[in-house]
Image 1 (cartoon, rainbow, N blue to C red):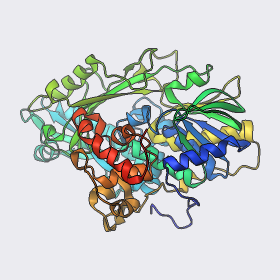
Image 2: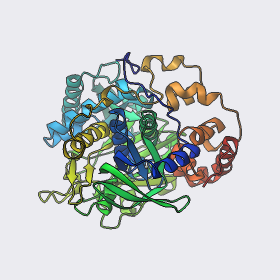
Image 3: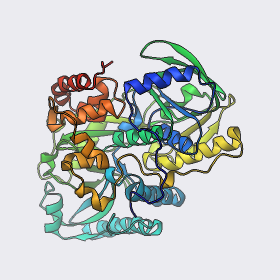
Length: 519
């Protein structure tokens, strides 16, 4: 299936987000009268809702207190899951939904931002036959879902057993003693979760949505909100036919009728060389559990992530969660059960944690047992809150949220969702990506827009080979308003302190070339 489907809806306006557009659209909002949809929250759910609503022809405004993807959406495992974990717990509906949404992302919506990733479980004697059969059964069920939703073998391969030598070739850092082979499955991986959020938001802007970052909601009801521009301090009221709360774990601050039980998931950052430079995910069962794994994820800049934990987050919800010391220990201990040279804390050059907005369920004590299914809740004030869910199913969450708004607030006459057939900015057929006239590094990050990025003038380079063109594109087209936006989100260099420190001057120079003063 082509990423650029003939007849697919195309954004009629510019998709570029920058400081000038923000100021212009914020000024216009003060005199806009009543809009159709006000979306609160600039993570993947809010961006998805803005795209769904705007592409239906609804006058849409998205406001975000900080930057795009400044909350949970930048702390994911960067995977596009097929729902295997949900099959194990009998949640067939959400497993099928996950596989279907993964299919759309990888084949039509964002083939340039996704790729297939091998997941290798090494098998050690004794017990390797039993463990291999169990893992193989799970991978087989997941592959059945892949076939059910129509994802072709060329996008995600079939799973199967590996011999000892092939296992060592794919995951060379594993312990040799007792190794008998492995099992290999396949899933989807995002180039980066923030890149997905930015692409969705920019596509929404192309359909006419106003995407306004650094705009805080002081109060909200079902027919409007009081907003404050955090750049200038000015305030304004906006009237809306529908207000949708998409603030994730912070949804209760907008709508007190929402009750969530957030969990925290932690990842470690290590040099990829410590894992043998593997391009596959080394997947290790957590001792004593039949369904939990610790895994590695190949990452940009020659790094790898190790995750993920699932522990209660408590009642304090900081903007940037802090990994727990016990979580770091758990991840290292589990991974070290299969490594030839065990990792130490000195190998951990960074760490990050995200908060999952899980719906409360009195039947389960552990957050790992709570469903990832999303829900739409209408509060006593009329605000609609879209909560729960996960990154892979963002499009379906958005569609359901806008459908609910149509039923309860907007009335008949609104078009049905079109987002199944709307490629995101930069989308290009996977088999033709290599033909784009741009360096492979830029093609992997920008897809069809890579040649435009490459044509920008040069300048100071940031850490890990991040180019001046990438930084400037973040300012000119991707809505970066501050150096933090560039370093922490558009490039992810901020995950490692040394990289961040090395890159701030280059980021400042990018703003200067774009003729914009950073916040």
